Image 1 (spheres, rainbow, N blue to C red):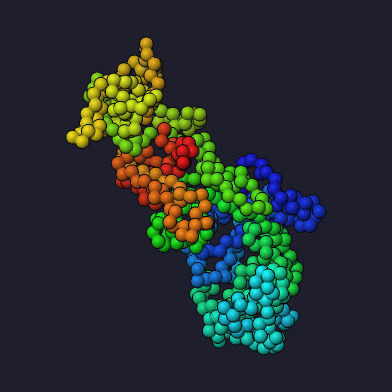
Image 2 (cartoon, helix red, strand yellow; image 1 turned 180 degrees about the vertical axis):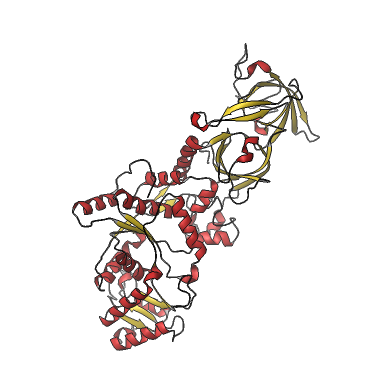
Length: 551
């Protein structure tokens, strides 16, 4: 059941369901989420998950998780476990866990029934020949010579297909519908093919596997699904969905309803293309934080609530459209602004020596973990004679309206004192490597007397700082619609990952748990990496910048 807090906005699917219940068409709403376990789920699947589980939960119904495992050569138990984890992580619980393979025997029996009714036949032609026979959008197809086989011959051949007496691809079971149909999907579509592939659940029990269009509708009916929700590309398949159910002996007839799929700018959601990114080494894996997979978003630091919020904001429509990446980024930015603990991190350290600060003194300054949420408590931040600030917070030659540290100028260290720079030390190449400053001991929590200090910068104590690797992730592609490119890999963003190995973070982060999310003050929102981080090596992934800075 969803943990979404706010009442969902209405949409055409919710209106259909409400009307069906009011008319007592169904006593209970039953939906399903039916992924194929041939890859990791992505943000587009999140929309479908939220819709299917949400519709069921809103109406005191139930939603099944069903694996469409009819194409075993591309499927694995690894993907099954990843999908289960993702659905749970998003905050949903399925009523029943099902698999299309649960119904292999029933699916076979229904195919036999279609043959006996003269509505299916075994075809011996090649895939190329069948495509040629099928015709085009403007030209009707022509019947296969095998369409006139007798029922007895078809039953015998189909039984031998199951028994493994033929080679892969030698025969195909096809529905006998209408080769002149305007909808090409109705021109004698394939129902079964021969394929000797080890199945991750049924092993080698089967050497014939049913096609998706045949399997999905029957599986829905077996499970008494009331509303079969799918994306718009299946609209042209709905007549076949209904034809199969109308011509077999089964009581239930679910209603297929199509909605617009999620198209998110600067991403691709094709499993084939995502797999290519992984195989070709453009990303570190399916859970790379730049990937639009749920696993990637989770590792980047996204929260389940932010993704559910995003899916609710974009709504459910009947027309495909592209969603700006900024919408997703704003969802996580708003979530983390309310929930992420604050901490200080210096990504490009510049050493500052406070010359008039006592050499052996260390103050444990108290800092709020969240400025608007006292319940998140406070932490101790050590302050000593030497601190690191960020290189960007000092300018040897400041630009106009610069409000940070300059030679002869003052700035406040966040939550600490006002310091003044009086000496700049450079290396032989002229790079600034150290600043010598003084502090005003009367400015801890107070404004300095007789002068106004506008700039506030973050810092960490040199002695107490922890070493960290910081990974600055950005959008994986440099164009809004990479899927439209002839070579989508040619438009990969070369700046999608910047690794900073010499960052310094405050000592309180030594006890942070894997996956913990923080706002590094003035820097951005970050997550402690769940795969590469350890007690000996802190690795932080940037989830999102503090503001939308994409150009």
